[in-house]
Image (cartoon, rainbow, N blue to C red):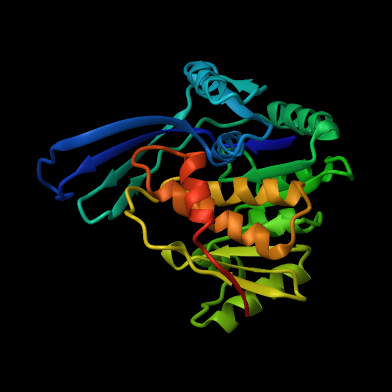
Length: 307
């Protein structure tokens, strides 16, 4: 079972427009609501791959039941630490050039008591989990060190994956992780360096290995992704697909990679699965995950090369 921890859920309002004209009236072509959050997307991605996932994290009294219902429809069981207020809303505007403009809301503040409850819950649930995934941003009132607190109580037999950046990622790495998946910008922000070449990126990955990661997978958008464990490096180029939305692509990558890690797959297969799932996700408009059929199609048509 793959356990995912969502610390900052959100309602994604994805709006499609012909063009986004600032300061003028814009007409909506399509609008979709998704009850989401990075780790919830991962749990759904695992379920779409017909494997077992379980979702936990923080949730809010006013509209949290909608998230439970969305997870139920995907066959993902869940249990949350409940808080007062409502889940934040994020707005994503997509124009006819597939350009994404985001406006993100700020969520409710989480008390120290509620934070302690979730630490206890994760420690208990991880005893029956093969893989633990913690990803995404933090709500108000929660320090970056909270990532380390959560990973620190995980069962020693559980594999650990983080998808975050900056001080949150550095805190998580201090506990030792089996896989981290930053994108290029997140890697640059975390290490405060600019990477212009593939060799530069690999050096950045090695820096994260030195800080406590066993494997680093860096997503490069439509150019694919890199993965390394310090001994071997692999690159996988994505295939050309119609990009309808980049929302949730990184979460799809983590879902497939987590499943491969759970199955004991080699490094190149972890990468291949991750790129297939991320690519499959971008073909869907207003949806936070991919279909198994699209994933299988793309997986069969991409190639991993050692670099």
